[in-house]
Image (cartoon, rainbow, N blue to C red; front, side, top):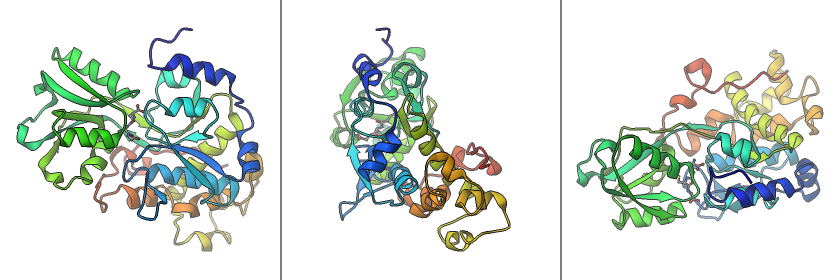
Length: 338
Ligand SMILES: N[C@@H](CCC(=O)N[C@@H](CS)C(=O)NCC(=O)O)C(=O)O
């Protein structure tokens, strides 16, 4: 029992060691459904729409994996998890994967015994304050009350930031984003801090978004991505290469508009391998030849998923920034499909 790094880690590590980690791909196929852990609700990333169907940037990862593994992007059971419950849900086998704005950190990977299969959003922690407070920098927050979600990296970064700047704060611990929003708008805390993407998504749902400002400081690196259980390698490959398929599709210009046509075969061998008209990549993964085609057809390539759910033309309004393709000055760089 070595972990003191992360709250709740003792139970989680224990469960991970005991869970039947191997064979999740077989389990998913036998069940005919993917159990995908998401947030309890963060508009743009994962939230049920007016018809009760889950939608969002993280939801799209679940749907793409279901399409790759089962040929059906609707064969997903969405399991809401909080910052605190998500790791136990994954370690215990209640969910097959977690796609919930979860930061890839050393201790989650190594000590909690998970396997991050990539990054679907490069983020960092920010601060939101009501405009009327007249604060223009996080360094002016000495003595502030801060709404903060428990079981997150946010908690740990906040403590580091205030300590290294020699200022103090009073945490107002909360469990879900909905609760944070409520408490913050009710004035129970002066500041809400979380991943900058989460702040943008939350602010977009306010009646008067312009009354709230995001401070300039980004105090951490938050590479957010899907994860599976450590040791669950075949399944991890399916999740990893499904995300890579969405990223590669954007790089190669495969879109939901041209995928049907391109699936008949193109003059680009990598597109053909991605879409399954050439090579045996599907077979290597234990999937059908058209797994990559199905993954991309589920919600479009990475860029389409981004634009539709959180991009500049949505109320959330996020720029691609670090999440642009490497060819466009960003960090998105899928290994080759060969
Ligand atoms: N990336 C951080 C924070 C993730 C997090 O919990 N973010 C909040 C605020 S954006 C959230 O997703 N809330 C949704 C919910 O409450 O279910 C982590 O992995 O610890």
